[in-house]
Image (cartoon, rainbow, N blue to C red; front, side, top):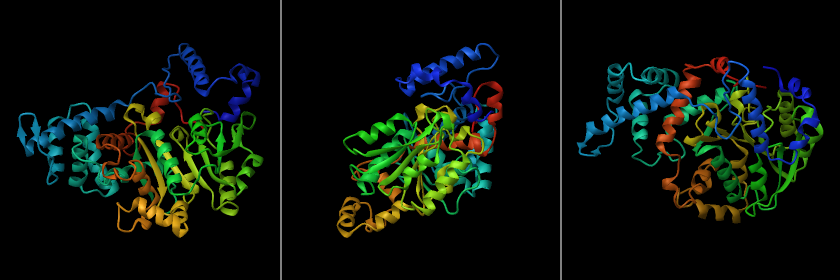
Length: 432
């Protein structure tokens, strides 16, 4: 696939002038129309990830999901079998029973994936087989609130492994990230903005920077009366291949800029921030703006060969946001995740708050722990997502977490389907 810089110059700027007053969504519709017309001239199907809902679905993980559900119902009835009522699945021996079930239903859609998944996860991630299968089974039944509320134990480890591949190009920074499973990338945006405010990291009227062009709700959120941020725009222009110039990056040197929000690859530009620009941003943060908070929304990162998120190079400063909607064709499942490194700037900022603010926050989160001052920012985010007092019901629903987990095992850890195969059947590609 050609680099964006070699494609864009072939389209004269004048061709875009009629669309300058249109929203990115209207422009998207026109581009989709052009792509459909082009696909009719060839034998390639149009696989479109650049829209609100991708026009394909990943079938194998869904088949496995529904087959797992059938086994889970049998496990409920094994404990208690009354008309319309079952018991709660039990862990002892459940992996062996699952293996027997799959052997009996070896020709069922999804059985192959499930058969390979458990031994792989046990070997690759060191899981106890009974504990792993029980988490899957009990969660797909959905008979409990999420425990832990931030993310299920095995699910977090699987998603962490996936993000280290997808967002860090298999070259992750030292340490680990704490993850919060959320209802899609949009929920991640809402929760992050809210908790940054609640914890006095950002304040109404503060100055933030937005890397533009950007997903327009980032602009609209900043203008809400909840925030009323003073916004500095860091432009990645078409003439510069949608990359940030040195002059634009220099805007981030201003200490008044508290945070930098970026969508990478860009939306609607579909161009990833180049390694050269990332190196400059990395140097800027480490030499001049060690206090800068970065939020990177990387929902399209999995379409870029060798993609490396800012969360990989600047883990201390960066909040990572990822959604599975586009790459897995599952917007309706509402699957996303927030990643914050275990050693991060926000936790340090919270610890340095003056006593009056610390006392206020201790009161806010005091119902959660006897030592609220030690509560991590990402756990505060979980509590804030349910206005703290409803924290006991926080967390992404368990069936969603199971679907999330097995999509990832299916596509990127087990490697049963390659993106090369998608390229052979359509116009989906990982583009830098």
